[in-house]
Length: 326
Image (cartoon, rainbow, N blue to C red):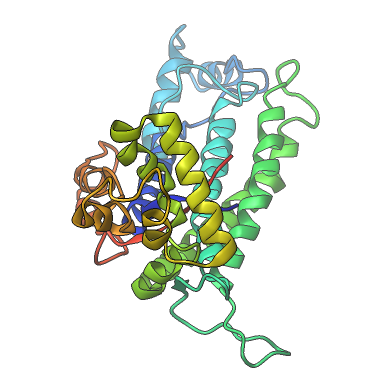
């Protein structure tokens, strides 16, 4: 990817927070109903047992038994026995897959932004290399990223188990056992690692600012075209800015110098306005407002103590380069 336009670390971290809150809501929305149905889902054996014990049986005995069983176990009450209606397990698998992906997105960003050539983020504790003493590997992000790649196929197995024949299939629900355990283990471990990662994450705002200058201000060409278009026309502005960009990239001249030496653009904007449109920190759009809105949003399914969760950055408007996504 290449530099596109500036963004802010606050906006990126607010996106992480939104993913985590969404994942938690999806998990909390999964119903875990009690399963009681007998050999074929009719609860006939329980009726027979009641009759053998001299208890008057009725058509709704099974219904009342399911309700009592759910209450005793503390699980949700299902309207039907669900031994071959595996939606609860499939829902849990899907939520686990989403959660793994959400945490994986955070980890992937940390892995990218902690590369030597980027160096905008670092994990709070040192993860050394067995062979290279200089390295500080992002071990938690690595563990999370590994889990995020393993859970979706496991969720796929749980979804395929929805195809359950007859009333007690051979192989379908048995296939859930190991993938479900492994998915729970991986997501639980990834969540614990993500908590530690976020708690100790180090943010280098100076490096972020320096990285916006790596291409000599060329990430602002979009803004330059918009700024000069009213005076010289959009097509002429774009062509002139393209020439400016080529000179900056080829000769390493300052962006403002290249603009002022371009005949179609020289003297068009006052110096104060030119300084403004060539400042990356002044071209982050609605990022601060979006962060403020995201931090103020309330999710119904999230516990109230999470409402005060703050962004990882102490200044959500710090600019970082936004890699073009195309």
